[in-house]
Image (tube, rainbow, N blue to C red; front, side, top):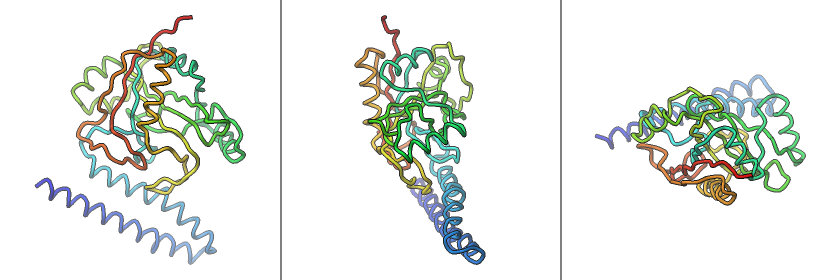
Length: 278
């Protein structure tokens, strides 16, 4: 019975894929080509296909494939798979900031018109922007609470970076151990001075590319997020900022496979932040 359900799921997804191609080629492009110059018709077709039709198709497919499963990755504003969850740290916001400051990492600026324009200029002219903003990814029903980065060289195109979402420790201990989906659905953000669980998604930017699923313009990233997870934890261990390092499985009932353009073993490294001696 299970194989039959999976077959039906894949047939439906195939149908969605064929429908998306038909819409893009024979509806959007054909309509635009009749009204606009060829180059504008191609541009409009790309915009509608990459930012409207394909994201909607992917969201429908994910609802079919991952229904009732606990996700091990963040999502984009379109509801598409984002960076895998791979790091968790326990401590206060002040401890988190102090740990990454000690590593020489910068806190990312909040995303806005000014910071976005600054990032575009830095990217085009390859000029340093150590506090460049991050795009917003979602976990627990909200965008990241804070993010840190470290440029590779002086280029804003290449950097180590990680986003964090805070979660009450009491909430985490009562739900995560049992694999309850409510762990991931909690939307409340604890106070900044509380000792909390910081759930993080760390990746390494390597340049500029198109997303594999929807062909949207984005940072190119190293697909092996396990390496970046291990790099971040090793850096924190080197300066004595973490203790009691353990490894846990992030997802329940979710196979560890390719997520978007990433390869992840589905594991989260958990560590406690410690107070540094002065």
